[in-house]
Image (tube, rainbow, N blue to C red; front, side, top):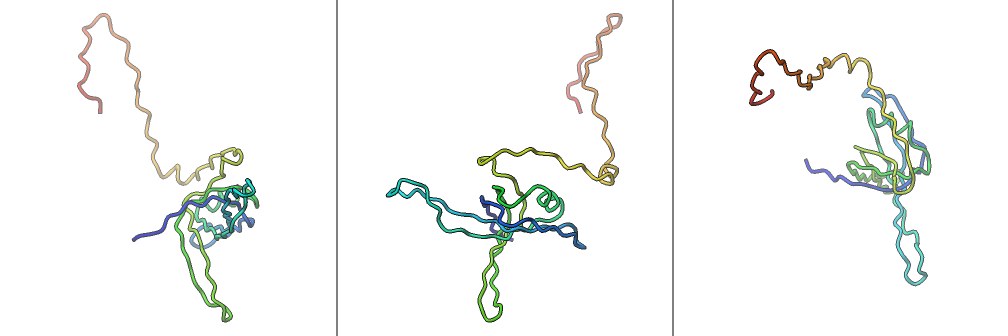
Length: 154
């Protein structure tokens, strides 16, 4: 299936709303994306039209977004664009939503401190721990003849 994947750079316009649903965590917020252009007559940057998107995040992305984002934060959002048209109370409405795959602070406009979220204990128990291979070379035994090196290590 063909989907429209976009990357939008803008500011968080509303505080993220977090909900626990039967299908898992969900969060949504509004993203304001304002075009800027250089007005050569005035020789200054001018704000253009502002587009608003509703950004939807699910599962762990929803939990992390709700705990990390605040109104006014500069962010980069990547996800699937969904444009919907609807008629409400006799008026035609069009909305643009982004089903987010990734959300992050825009580091071109500030700094951010990353903290990895702890993994749930059940996920760690489900995957058996694999021992780290012993990469150390054993010391050469001077009393016996040294064995030839293997052709390939598997």
